[in-house]
Image (tube, rainbow, N blue to C red; front, side, top):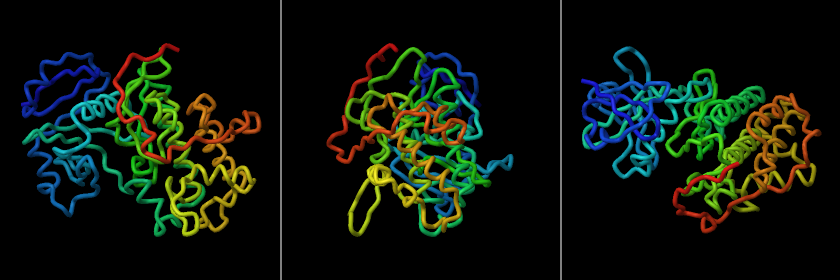
Length: 357
């Protein structure tokens, strides 16, 4: 038996009959897309009883398993652990956000289940080439990514972000854009995943005050310090990703001479010395467009500027990346902001009404 419940995050989601009764008392508006349901037994069978050999990922949230449904679909089954940092609110936030869109650069959520022991499970389309962090940012695999494939990945991520930031309403801010949350399908088409920390963003506000969430190295300093979340917070994280994809380095890197350092700071230093081209991944062996590579890194630096008002919106960043807009027509790039000390992060902030635009 399948039961429909409504939730206060404007979503409509079909759970199996194992759903707890306290959730039936919450009212909600209905989202445009209805996400399917799976029983616990169905997902257990699909993953061969969650066999360890089927595990394809693991983190603070729990584990992800590869599975095959009865209809033949290969899926990724995300099982949230009881100790997961992704609680009920994050679970419903992910469902709510992902029920609102369908886009080639966003991972598709097929459905989910609240099963035995109140385990929370989400079922996504399976991504054959894993995450960008595993596929690209590693010595063994980087050589497999040509300059053309890297530019297409950058543009695909930009399209996905522009869609959730500007095209759907209410807008969605992801809050944790990073290499491990960009998945690659069989054709290495990038898809943004993991919307557990996302926030809905109505049209008539400039920011919302909320607890700070994200990953050090990708975290916009203005958001980290103030707790004021804007779409420019995601733009900052995207800028870091651009620099990673072009350079083949991680957001927080290590050098035998420099020790631990932040890629954003390194890129700014080389920009000021007019040596940005030297930051391009040596694994490309010179097989890339120098003009294009510098343009991509300059866009990355525009996205990570300390003053969030100077960062471009995602649709503008896309046009700059594609060469549709000449960077010389834009304002001068200013110094980036960096959060290098976790003690500077505003860890707790109550949710308050947003400031009007």
